[in-house]
Length: 314
Ligand code: RIB
Image 1 (cartoon, rainbow, N blue to C red):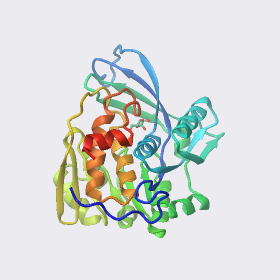
Image 2 (image 1 turned 60 degrees about the horizontal axis):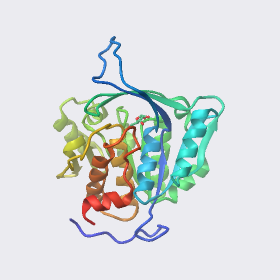
Image 3 (image 1 turned 30 degrees about the vertical axis):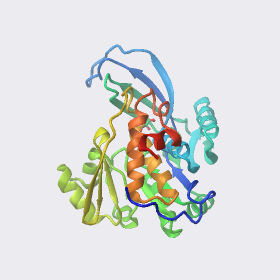
Image 4 (image 1 turned 45 degrees about the vertical axis):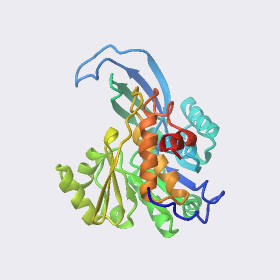
């Protein structure tokens, strides 16, 4: 394993608690597990209904704080019971929620999730307040003072772009998880965040449906590293001419894969914020993602730092 980088200059506890700002979605997940996933037009009977806390942004924030980062969340919920619950849960995790807006005009985001027997899922999101997320000057200033910005595609493209611009202006490392899939603009590619697509998101991002060719094309157009997440197979780092595979860790138990990608991104951000190398951050993120699938919902098995370090033998 590569040597540790020096401690981060802006960390609260140098080398330990980097500051991660997440701007992204906050949802409540309505989940039913079933023996198999339904086909289009089909109704099937499933098992017990469960409500879990979710949203890619909020999940990533929780993964980062459990991995040891100081975390600030920027996002929006409605003035409804789901919103109150979501904020209370994030606060209880130790996340700074002072930049989460409560909007009268929109309900809190909701995701309808079906989980199959191998933990695989189908997800449909009603964005609600997530679709109205926008940045103000105080948000931009907060981003410029953080160690790492982490954002995703469950909020308007304009909001994540604004956040990436603020990070660039402040010299802050940024990570864009391009999920759900959409094409990446030329400006996003020029800003050069660390990109974390899965293979489907990679294909859609570049508009080429052959994975290898899409990656080559994205590398040619993007000014930053690309970490392609591959589920249990691990991750592939593409950075200029460099291609490096990071093997996934076998998951001890697979109950629900919802949020595994979010765990990967949150831990990647936390490790990066404390001054670790990207290689080290990917190794930790892979380990955390493999642990995260052992429980129901996105967050039940999302690991704390001690569990990640134990798996890594640190
Ligand atoms: O990545 C998993 C998340 O996607 C779920 O928690 C759901 O809310 C959707 O945003």
